[in-house]
Image 1 (cartoon, rainbow, N blue to C red):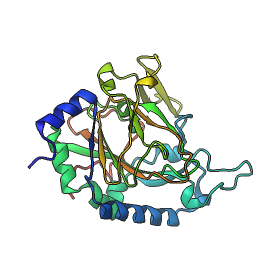
Image 2: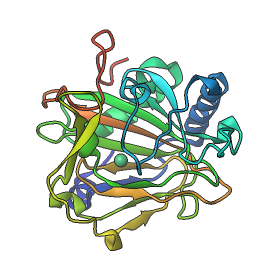
Image 3: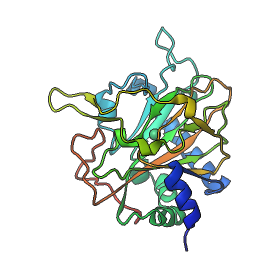
Image 4: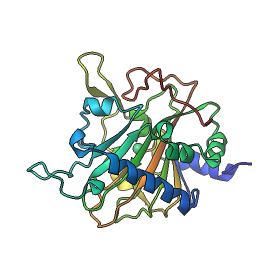
Length: 281
Ligand code: FE2
């Protein structure tokens, strides 16, 4: 029993993304939201000041060692000049990442839902690995812009196999910062690769194509709660800042094929004690 038929598969291959409304129920979305709220309650704001911003891609050790952990990152506008939070703690966190799916029961159950297993099979994955999970808050008023990018820039495999699963946990609109994508833009090749430097620590970009993104070709993917959006490894996509009074929570999973080469200088690395796993519980 498949989730998507040949026509929809062709649509995905042509445009580089596919919108699947009502993939998850409202109850499933709410269970994730409740659990994320508990994780924020437990988060000690004094433990880190780590900010996630796509306007500055220098990442600190707290981020670079989070591939096999559950960690919170602040919005870039979370702090006032005096160092205090502009909004409540629960409305200051940009995202939680990056191994929620392996370390938390609620996220594990959601991420290994039977429908996801079938969907990823439909796309031809033979040995899928769940590499990365992120709970993205896109907070009211200060939800940061995510600049236009391809997921293969950050999760590079040879060949390119990274698959993005983007799930709306609330209605996503042009007001609260929905996804935007360039239909067919995945056919134009990989523009850059983000990796750890060979020496001296830190990260850098290898640039393969320095031309600007054709942002005039972006289309908004406004979707309702429970919708899943499939994103090809090379699809250019982004989201604008959220200046509205409403949040736009989303959950993302990134899958790679186990047989593809996963370089040791990708930013996201897993400790040998917690290797990336597939869909089996
Ligand atoms: Fe992305």
